[in-house]
Length: 186
Image 1 (cartoon, one colour):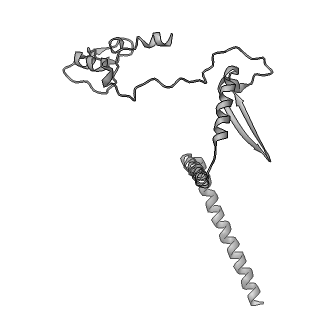
Image 2 (cartoon, helix red, strand yellow):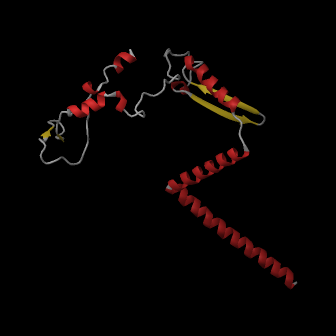
Image 3 (tube, one colour):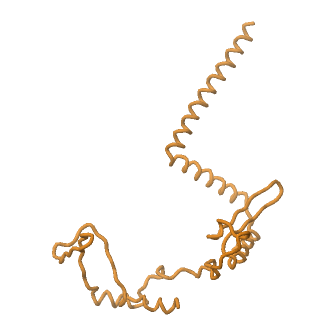
């Protein structure tokens, strides 16, 4: 069925819509009756149509995506005991409990085994190096700082805490120096 539908996607069957704020003055401008949008209609030139029909000229970046093996085929509803709010999409979560690692997978029943196989294959082949871990931690810290600064409320709270902390350190230093001065004079 998909190949049949894709067969209709040819340059001869297509429609191209171009959105622009301005029109060339020589074009015949029409007005759409419902929304009063201005538009023009033009036929695609035969030379451009020939270029599009020649598959050797098509950019290799224009292709269909790889088959998504996680798209479910069984949409039957699970019994309420097995069902949860997370069943509407595929999800994984990994949690560390003291000396145990908990892996959870959520999604449609017929694709959970595929998802679990992929996760376990990645986990099995995972062999981090010290540089890799350092890089991941650094990226995570940078992302956290960037995200904090993107939210004005968080950023202002952070700055306020910095000022309070500096004030606290100053008063702590001042009290210590006073007590040291008091000890030296005694």
